Length: 592
Image 1 (cartoon, one colour):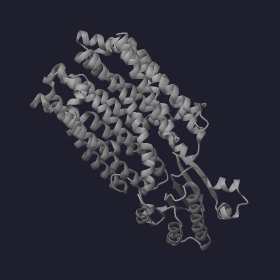
Image 2: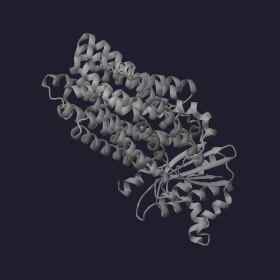
Image 3: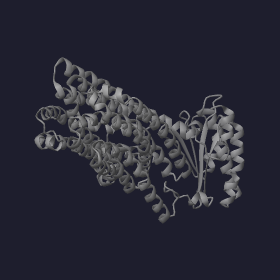
C-alpha cells in the first residue's frame, strides 16, 4: 500500500494497517504449524491407502478417533493454560506465565500416562468402540493401537510448546516444530512400512517417534536466550485448575465431539453404504483434517490478539480483529472450497481410492463438505472469540451444534430418504449453526446492554470516556493527532496542565517511536487508546515495528537533549510509564 493511500486512511480514526500486519504475523506460522500436524495424518493415510489398499484405508479411518482423543486433551490443557498465561503476559507477570506452563505440562503428563495405561488394559473393548469388528480390520486396528497408545503422550504434549511459544511472540517456532514432526513421521513411516513390512503397527510407531523428535525441538526453544519460558514451581497455581479446564473446554469439546461424530458416521455409513462408504469417509476425513488446519490458523490467531485488546477494553481494536479475521477466513475457506469441488477425483486417487464405483459417492461427499467449509469458518471464528472473552457457554454451544448435534441429526434423517443423502449433514449442519448462535448472542447483548453479536461494552466510548485511533508514522499525522486530542480532554473536563501534558506526551512519544521503531522512509501505523478512569487518564500506544522502549532509550542516553528532552518531561510528569513487548508488539502505557 503506497503512502498516499495510507495517509487518506488515517486521522483520528482507526485503520486496519497495524491489526492486519499483526494478524498476518501470527496467521501464517499458525497455519503452517497446524498443517504440519495434519500432514502426518494425511500422509499416513495416503501411504497406507497406496500400499495396503482399501482395507488399510478403512482401518485408518476406524482408528482416527485416537488422534482426536490426543488433540482433545492437548487442546484442553494447552489452550486453556496458554489463554490464562496470555493475560499474565499482558501484565508483565513472566513468573506467573512459567508457573502456568509447568502446571499445564504436569497435568498433561498425568492425563496422558493414565490414558495410555487404560488403553492398553482395555484394548479389546476399545476396538469394539471403534467398530473394528471385521477380522482383518480388527487386526490392523489392534496393530496400530499397540504401537500408538504407549507413546500417545508425546503427541499430546506438543500442544504445550505450540501454545506457550505463540503467546510469547514466537509463532514461527510452532511451524518449525510441526514441520520437523511431519518430515520425521513420513520418513519413519515409509521405512517401517516398505522396508520392514510392519503394517499399521509401523504407522502408529512412526507417529510416536515423529512427535518425540518434534518435542525435542519445541522444548529446546525454551532455553534460548530470547525466550522467557522456564519451568517453575507451580503448587500455588493448583487452585487455577478448574479455570484452566473451563477456559480450554471449547477447543477440547470440539475435538471430543468430532471424535464422537466420527464414531457415529462410521456406524451410520457401515449400515447404509457398507465398507465403501467408510472408505469415502476416510478420504473426506483427511480432506477435513487439511481444512481444519487452515481454518484453525484463523481461529487460533483470533485468541491472543483479541485477548490483549479485550483485556484493555479496546472495543474498536476487538472489532477490527474480528473484521480482519473474517476477511482472511473467507478468502481461505472460499479458495479451499473451490479446490475441493474441482479436485475431488485427484483427492480420492491420492489416498488410494481407485475403485470407480465409489467415485459418484465420493464426488457428492467431497463437494458438499467443501462448501461447508465457508460457514464453518464463520461459526468457528465466533467460537474462538467467545472462548477468549470468557463467554464459554456460547462457545460450547457453537461447538456442540456444528461438531455433532446438527450434522449427525441431519445425516440420520436424510439417510432415511436415500443413503446418499447421508453426506448432506456437513453443509446443512454448518449453515444452521450460524443463526442459532446469532440469535443467542443478540439475546444476551440485549439483556446486558451490550453491542451486537460481539457482546462488547461500549459505554465508555459512547460517553466520551475512551477514544481509540490510528496514526501514521509521519510528522504531519502526529502533529494533527496531538492537536485534536484536546477534544477528548475537554469532554472529560481535564485541567489545562494535564491536557497539555497528555498532548505533549502523545506528540513526543509518537515522534520517538516513528524514528526508532520504523525504518527510514517506512510509513508505519501506531494504534493509540486513551481512557479516563476515576481521576486518572491512561494512554496506551501500540505498534508492530522493531522492538523499541522509549524509557530505556532515555535511561541509556540521558545527555542526548535533542532525542530525550521530551521523554524526560513525560517521565517526570506522568504517574507511571510502562513498556512491554507482548506478542511481538511494542506496548507503552502512560498513567497521567
